[in-house]
Length: 251
Image (tube, rainbow, N blue to C red):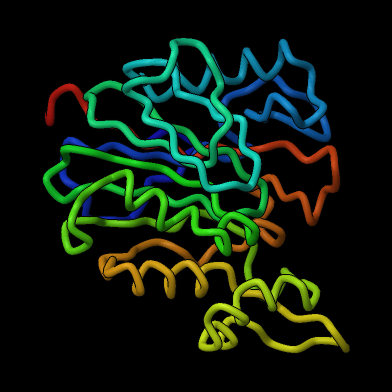
């Protein structure tokens, strides 16, 4: 895979393809966004973002333009097979059963997750910040995927690490009030504040839903300069993309 891209390390079927476009992927954005910012609502020049998205499609030889979402930290899952061409539906997850249809999730600290049915017949992608995660975006995505949990593979993409992610009591309460065992994902720092392990929370929720074939993780977007990070760079942070699709042939 070309420089600027990561290959997810999961045992997905051969026809399932996935990639993460880091900030070093081909692009024309300038500082503080450059070179590759794929987020259209981050304050970057819209023409640069459009050029970056075109360069992404060319570099990965994508079979179609990705379905970009207007992500709002919610739980809506859009069926890409029924989505209007060229639109950006308001949703935080998407699924497809159609070969050649590309799904994309934009992040800059939130957790991107990719899903695949183990026969390669369907894939999905979800955006899980703490709000969406606590509200049930993963459970909604699995429900839309409509596969037995034992048939589902999940991959946790680059997100902010626990050591870099301090949150207030309201974030901890959003999880622990509903699941006291989620306290294991929080470590106290100063009064009323906690380090939050998004990956541990996601793994816990996937396990509760019956999904045990979970791969990936171990990144920290705030500490790793390969990735855009809102916590590190502020409101003018760019966005990187995690993509998944079903190849039109398995070769």
